Amino acid sequence: MSDKKIIVSAIVLSVVLIAGGWYYSKYGPPLASIGRGTPTSTPAAIAEGIFYGNPEAPVVVEEYFSFLCGACVNFANTTFPQLDEKYIKTGKVRFVFYPYPPYELGAASYCVEKAGKYKEYADYLYAHVEEIQEPQDLINFAGAIGMNIEEFTTCFDSEEAIKRAEDWHAVGSEKGIDATPTFYIDGEKIIGAQPLADFERIIDEKLAGK
Image (cartoon, rainbow, N blue to C red; front, side, top):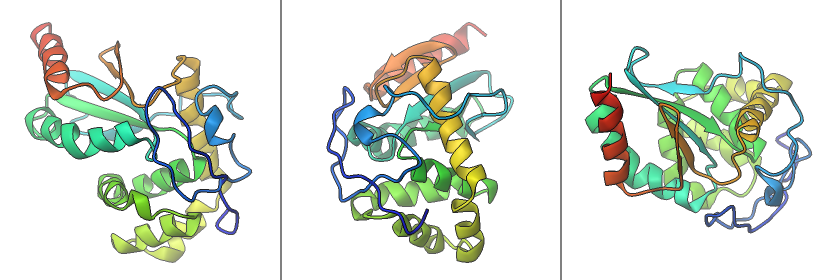
């Protein structure tokens, strides 16, 4: 995987995606078909997302996102930190992340999650997203947060990692998700990086109903 380029594409998925020097690999559809194409694998019960927060939290928020989606980057850098402080760190909400293509980013997410470093890696990636030009950059980012490069690369190049990335995409596709970010707050669908107040209102309503 690391020696393959990712196909460059500037697209709109009902939100603005960040244009970059990406060339998409053979493992997934072109960026223009994210959320519209047919995933290459069938979602299974084991294709759980990446969990963050209290496993016993009364409210669960699912996020279907792409690291290259401008609205997703904005949400991650502005709204999410406030939700984290108010709801996640206090044990009221658990987030479940489902990375959308490019699959290389999903594979990287899978590998850092296995090492218990997903949040640290995601924060670093969002801060340096405009520097991403090729898969090797994702490997370098893992090194930047202190991961063992050899171990990460072995995982990153594995079929297991790509399969999990495909499964995450398939889970969202089965729900008809064709725009990122898309959220489910205890089953209530929210499309787009809506204002913080909207998330607070819905979460508070869900908490009040518990």
